[in-house]
Image 1: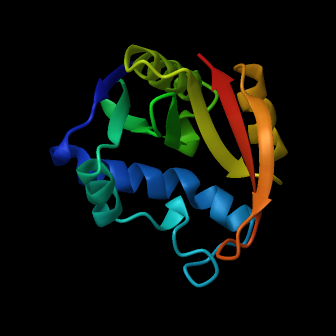
Image 2: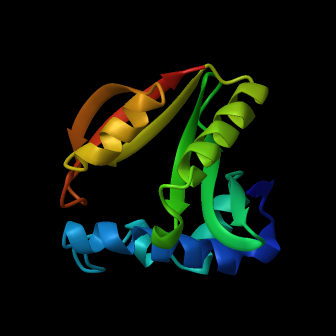
Length: 159
């Protein structure tokens, strides 16, 4: 397993990984381009490119030389960073990829001087909530957004 910082040349790979990794979530929660157009399962190259343009850093995980997962780190002020787009292809799950990506993002956030790492997840995704809790994230709050067909749970890891 190898994790490296992704560059612009990796944008098509990242968009594809994100789409393919989140497809099962979209199916589970009946998300469509009509009811949730910004869900990661509908990711296109332009989204990744625009994120990189505003300073979001992407990391690509390869298993045996094959792109199998990714995660993004966004600075959110002086004290916090956001963990975004944590994506592992379904065939590669339960092999430590997600945990390795979270550890990499955590290390990068610490190196950047952040005091907190924050995420947002679909509240009804209790299995994911528990997975993050096992890694030290605590629930910070919940919120409904008019443009989303689900409630969001915010979680934070103190660094």
